[in-house]
Length: 318
Image 1 (cartoon, helix red, strand yellow):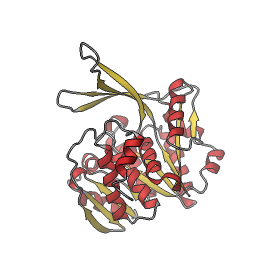
Image 2 (spheres, rainbow, N blue to C red):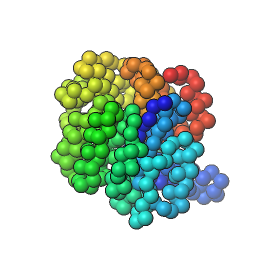
Image 3 (cartoon, rainbow, N blue to C red):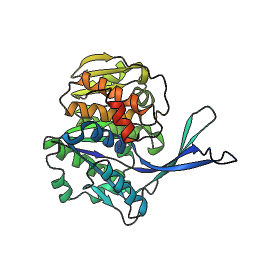
Image 4 (cartoon, helix red, strand yellow):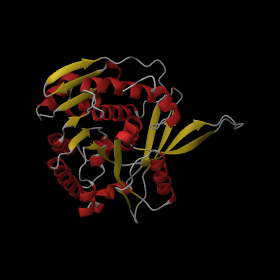
């Protein structure tokens, strides 16, 4: 069995849905839980099932919402042994609104998120629980929410994992509002790319940060770090894979009925990593990941109903 750690933030999500039973057609918000790395962890576990243990490294509160998250994680068979509970903070929150054209917008309340404290809980016991980790996955958001001091603790933690045989996986997932400057972001990403064994960037992020104009620009930049495996996501335009400089291009079958793209990249990451851990080569894994992502964007919400997900995934054997 493989051992996986995913590190990041889970937030309380309130998504707006039409209340058709209301005479005035008013709308209600439905509560759920989501976060980029958290979503990926769930999709890894759903795809790989009993072949791997997936631990979520984060900090949450001591309130009822945090209790509900732990219950959800149990239902999804995620390991909670690295979920720490803060006595001074709670989970962040965000709202999703949809305009008349179907475009989604987000409002966040995460300045006091407990997940920002996660590295303060990391101690010798955490290192012991992280022994024999095969894969450690984090995103740009995982780094952005930390203080400069805690980022240094993170680099040390990741270096220790890597020295003990763990593969480091990094998805830049750039969110400008979480950073003080582009230079700060680039400095942090440089540290992450230097440690990474697998990179899962999107073209859009590199356009914003590094003035990339195409997947080839992204590949040329990241190949300088000698990252063993780079999978460059470019939406419906397909993917470019670079394995130690050897490039392959993969087309993506268009999805005819797109409902919600919020978790497209997270689902792709989960599908890709689960397939690689199951022994598939990078191209096979990327094709499977595209199918997983296609499944998710045909449903509403970051976390698709488990039964619906499993039923649709029967058509996409790993």
